[in-house]
Length: 501
Image (cartoon, rainbow, N blue to C red):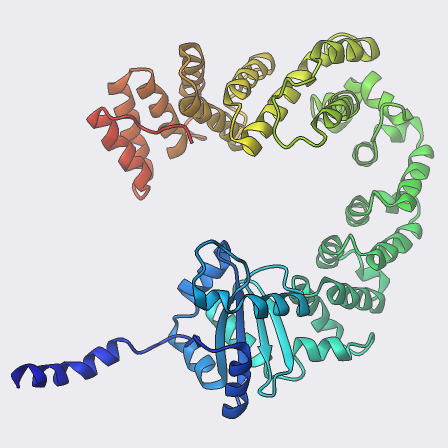
């Protein structure tokens, strides 16, 4: 009897602990039964379309759906259901029962990204659709929009007419719809750009908007028509140049650019803004402006006040024409391949030497070897030996300057950490260790990651005491980084730090 009383006393507390604070998602009902339930209770239907591999979906599950303020809105006004849109070997019978309906929903409502949210009226009509993660407040607003005829996506889709919307609302609306319906978003942007003053096309936000929709033929037409009206130095003014660069691949824009360049005097050719403009439209060694950079590079560099500018431009064209074109033919229909497969580097070097003279080939071939071997490493998770070999060769050729700023030092750090993880060759480890030693001596660029990489190389090279001291400095610099603390403990215990990933 005492046990029964105790059970009764505990029962309300147990039930309270199990109370759902966030969104209650229905389970065990078919799509037809959900629709019937929504109609009977006069509630909208909320469908969370997710995939098992979708990280943003998991974020919503963990951070938004469990919230009380979200649950209060959705549980009162919606019948909610989660539908798995992909198929796995681990699906239980309940998920498998939804396969057919999931497929129908995917096809009918063009679900291409996750999470996708579908909303239906109590009588089963589709009223709203949205995509992507939301903040708690944003998700509550989404629930309200789904019940507002003026905000409902499918209502808007059916009734959109150019010239009707307030232009102040159109950019935000288009950007909000771009993942849900890129075609409709493009129509809104087209309508917006045609209704604003032409002088406003090159405002910063409108340039960004046009860049976002640059693949839309209507937006291309608007941009090209604007660019056609530019005269003289208007073409290279900062705001116009940004727009021209965005649409530089349009034939009409290329013609306008070439006509502008052809009219430049010899003096104007070496003006900074014109050099930058010509650089953007330089795509071949056969065009006249190429000789400006190739034969008169010193004069270009002086005008730009940037040593090596012209060399970078010529290197880009050489690589594009004499290395990448050949490499693309080799790579065709191959997702993973050995970087040396069918690459006759000697023949490529000979061709470049004959065309441009000595000195141009070696630098560009070394950079290309690094680039292609890096592609293999990232795409195929193999080939580290070649990548490390080529990267060290290229760094030795071009020189390693640890005083050049955070971007360059980050590049050195990444390479050296790769050597630590994937090389056991003493010569390579010694080179990487020396580079990192030089880097960490420069206080203005030194980071906890730099110190950690240096310490890890010291440790792998057998210099344990030095490694521990350096790792202690890394921990002191970033005490919240648990990985650094764990590395330090392993060093002190004499354990292997990390295996190659």
